[in-house]
Length: 65
Image (cartoon, rainbow, N blue to C red):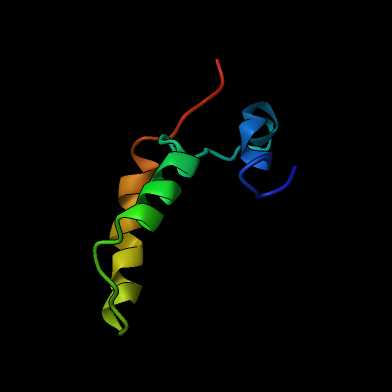
């Protein structure tokens, strides 16, 4: 079990460990961010975005079926 793009494809192992994976396609989002970056912000505000991002990310987790 490795935390890599390939490693998260084996979602059954993550589910057994009690870890919910992102509900979106990580590779697709990463590629789009590289092709169309929207903003870059350096500052303390990003620390607070982590909390909101964590809530949003946790609300759409996926499980293997």
